[in-house]
Image (tube, rainbow, N blue to C red):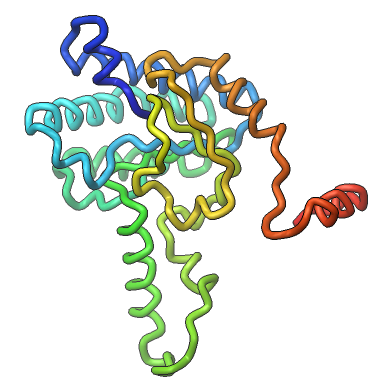
Length: 236
């Protein structure tokens, strides 16, 4: 969700105004996702690198995060949305950690949409913590020279509860994934838009989905194999 600060700057507003507008966009995108039958929506809210930003801005972001947890979780629950937060939350204040835990517990049984917020998250951190958890569990059974199947790591990733993403959307004109879901995006379709996040709306989401639908997803196979599989009515 990139471009909050630039959106505010273009309007001669403080950066916090852009972040507040960005929260409104989150609400709109959640609503649009539900209307379109999307079952998993993951938002990169705060990366592990964002701590490098000016301290005042980081403090504002933490305040907005806390306020959103306080004000939005009940609404998510009322609308059948499950909340998950992934990332190294240990660096957050205790009150934020408590709100995260409470929100995840309250919404745990909801199935209409799983909303994941990536907060203090980094893809490299995710892979490293998954490998560490795997090693801790299996250290006594590991052979020194035995190859490690990548699929063995997958259950220990932060988003092991969700399917790998079909579509990655980045707003703001940058064309990189910036340490987001490095493992999970291996075969995800990438979509970049110059729209700043506060300007991203249902129509913009539809444009991204239309782009996705026009692509052929081969997963290492040839076009002919994909077409044969489609004709046979089977999936990968």
